[in-house]
Length: 433
Image (tube, rainbow, N blue to C red):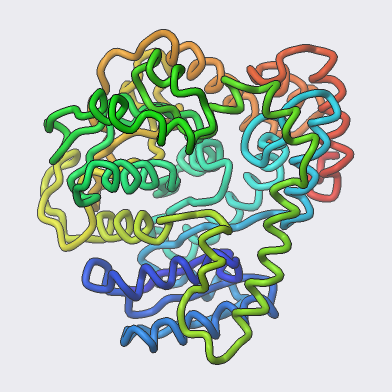
């Protein structure tokens, strides 16, 4: 089995490599190719990756290269984890929206739109080269904004699945609180990427007992503290929102905070500097503890499970688990709606539990959605429609329309100003500008 990681020079990569090494019985990787245009970073990351494999006795081969076409040739799956413009672009995404009193964040609001505009054309070019070289390869997208990027890939007919670590983070957290193994926790996970709610927490599988009421009653204070939301809000909703919902439920409070502290991008840039220095130490042969603060917790486990399910020998019909060589048959992924949420278009990309096998992911049925959540989902889906159109076709008016549609912006004066700011700060990445 050959896997290729595009953006292999990322400081995230040792987390992924550690998962491949530990979970080799689930996903028997024979060749792992790390491809990245940043040669110096790639050498540092690749060296540590080889030492991690050696320490854990993994027999697989790790290859580093700047040749994308050669890297994806013959790959069974291609993982995308790239950041167009690097941390410098992220720093801009997190700061200029604050000037209008709007949240500054790399995947949500105006900053998220900027990232989508930079990213979608690059990802589609990569995917087309994968298709020319190796049309049967699965593309696993971890590149933000995952929902918009995955929709762009699916719209162009690529074999793609989007992946986020929010759900697996909740699974691990809830399992620890309940004192059970993570595999015993099945989430009723509902929404769009970075706009999700846990409406049920079941023991043992999709039909298991829903212990969410007990979880909130016994551990609601801990969960609310992690989300930085009031315990009373969780009790009133009866669900667990993702931490990204704080940008919606406490927008003005978040803006005040962001204006008074260093950006997350600045923190991450400093962490990356330290991590790369560590990666250059030839004695280091495991992922350093600092990497846990970088973000992407449990990314490796989620990626291994998804790749194993897609590449396993599941012989059942589409939509059934079949026979599995590894990975979990039910996983939270970003997938085409196809009627799962009837109030959204069929081609919208939603983030829900799905049965995953070699035929691809098939969403599990979702009960009727409370209007409190359905309304916000419909509005953000409309924004994502307009954002993708702007990413594919460019133009100031398309950017303006997307910003005007976003529920965190919505006022024409803000949308006008933010449009000009977005274009000014991203001109080098927007050929039409």
